Image (cartoon, rainbow, N blue to C red):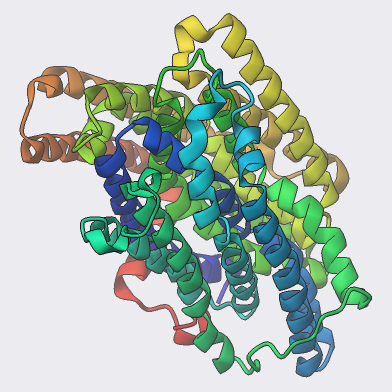
Length: 545
């Protein structure tokens, strides 16, 4: 089977499972929105969840695997299998100790943790609920980090389905506890200030993090590993190499998540309208429905592939793998960004405007989504180009570039808050992150090209040009259809959902139709991926079921 075929097979399964996970994630976020809206309690919940979410998404979306997989693959290829398992055990227990200490410190110094977020807040006393919720949620980082390590181990064996599915159980746990809030005994014995739906949601996050780890253990045992016998080491050569790779990769791969952290800090400014923190969180979650379902699936698959190509001296093939992945992901993310920008208000209204999430909440969130959506193609491209560096065990360059992008984000946030707040309002942090993402990708692309030679930019530009023509035509049709439909006058939810589905369907039909007329090769590759996902023909050994 060709490398392209292998990537399409594995990515199709991951994308399908990730879509299910994102749907569950949407239902989770909808429950949060219904129960809390964009109230101060909602902002407190988002603040308390930010650091665990940062750890979960940075490790779960490849930063830990970027350091671990190349090393572990080398053990599997060049040493006895037992040496590889011993190495994995040492990493597991070292991480357990480090994360356990961090979790304990986060509980003890919860007020100081929340204080970092609220540097620009005029009233620090309003965040007492956030401090209490942080103590409930913060221990989850221990289980999230260990779950990410187990995911990296399984991915090294080209097992993708079970690791991709663990987020489903996390989301279901939070959803279940969101209904348990109506069972009053769960809140009995708690301080009065904590008898809120936010507490039940926090407990759900903690339970869900445990499930993320537990659900993967049986699959790991089937690959021949004992259940992590204690083996702590800081002097082992492999462990030290992992540490040297891990810290910069954690920063380089997770710069987008760190920028969200920065956005949250600026969103607590007294100039920002109430609910800005939650609106940014919900807008990011809507964008993740696209970014998470496809770009992350592709980046998960290509890292082990490119690591093996580098190990075999096939640098040209590795660059072709990247070019193929970037083209097919751009084929999805470019029209998705256009669609999110034009249909942002109907999308937020249908998905979230229920319960305490009112029309004002929709307006705030739609404004943030506009500016986050502008950066969607760049966010996806970063997910694909950083594994090229990591496959060559270069984690420092993405970290340095990420530091530059982070600085750009901070400066842009400050400039927008001071000089452009009148025009951008709560969307200013989102726009700063989007511009920083394009800056990040451009630097990574230039650095890699200078070091390893051409990356087929001419052919890529031609493909992107065709996609831009298709997306522009789609935008014109979508805008006209939205104006003609008079969506704002529709009041019933089912009618709104049906009309939104028609608008999206018409836009997709125009985009795919023009792609067929212009003979975009990415269309055939994308349809092939869908057929494989629907038919379930991916071999059991390949997806790890």
